[in-house]
Figure 1: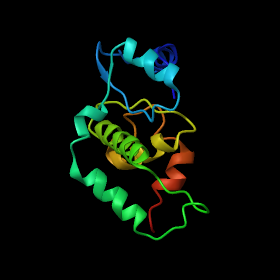
Figure 2: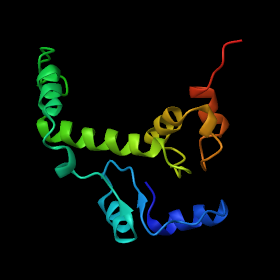
Figure 3: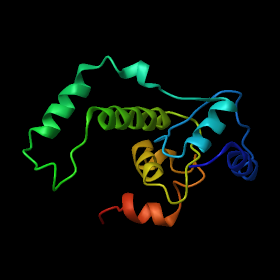
Figure 4: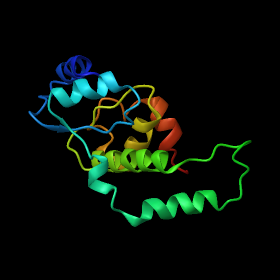
Length: 141
């Protein structure tokens, strides 16, 4: 996760202007970085935007129906399913953007690069990197 100062440094390197408002995909695990981005114009999808979706409870019911013994394996609760829903919606929001700023060691960024596709590979600070190409863009030949 980046904070706003780090985003400014990366944007300057790529000669990109950070818009007054920009979309942020975040798992909200590092609250200080997340709040710093919000303070500086980041826009996110909030739980209130998707909490009404009946699929969230369906996912939880499906997850719990696998008959795991939750004392020995991890079982998500409704709070975790809601958090993951927000993360996935945030990530999907990054697919259509003109330029994607991602984190070098971020699995979230890996996934966003893959979802953005081959044609948007160079419209990013990281999607073109060999470590990502080897994992996601292997072409049969």
